[in-house]
Length: 306
Image (cartoon, rainbow, N blue to C red; front, side, top):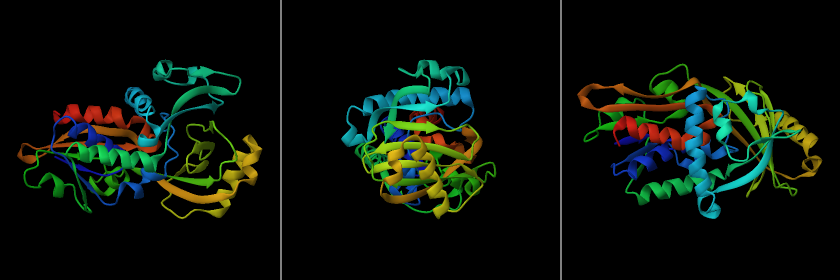
């Protein structure tokens, strides 16, 4: 079996399949640390993802896994951290919200204890867990999914190529939503904060990570540039400092840009291919790939019979 794609969706899917006894190879164009997943702010929350009902179930499955992984934060990169989703109410969310422990309304919005994930650490941990289960990593570029489907001794292929699916499938419904972040020296902030409307192009959030305070952000549809915009970075810090004034004087450590692989709905389905082989698509998770990764991986395992 081949999993194409080495971001958080691909690696998590590969782990689940390998630990169920499947012989799995991951084909990835670049190391996990260079994927879009590596630059994510990485707070668990079903953000900009459809269909809502399925996404809620995938997210809750993943939440259970992250809660367990948070018992070993140094190893897995997962911590449970408290924070506020400003301006949100429970009745604005789907049924999944009622099953999130400690999610409650306050005068500011919704307060919760949620998984916050240090992605470079987590991606490295996923890779090692996959290898320990007997998996094989191969760095190679793929110009057509047929390369994987028609490989010798392959009975199934899982397409976890994210934005790459736009050309590989091809699926023009997959579009980039550009996100820009600024990492600053943490002035002592221990809780996360978000104020992000579902369709807003400008959002305000900050996440305390071990390598600094990650401040954001943007959600620019159909923007492909990976070059940080200094004016946008300045505006991000200004908005964050309106919430926590101490951010204004924090030393800037770096800038990050990622392209969320967005689609009108996640494509998680089995596609018939010739020769009795199985092709399963698992892409289009937008800004919520980390949030739904384990739930989607479980569904993939069912579709491939693993």
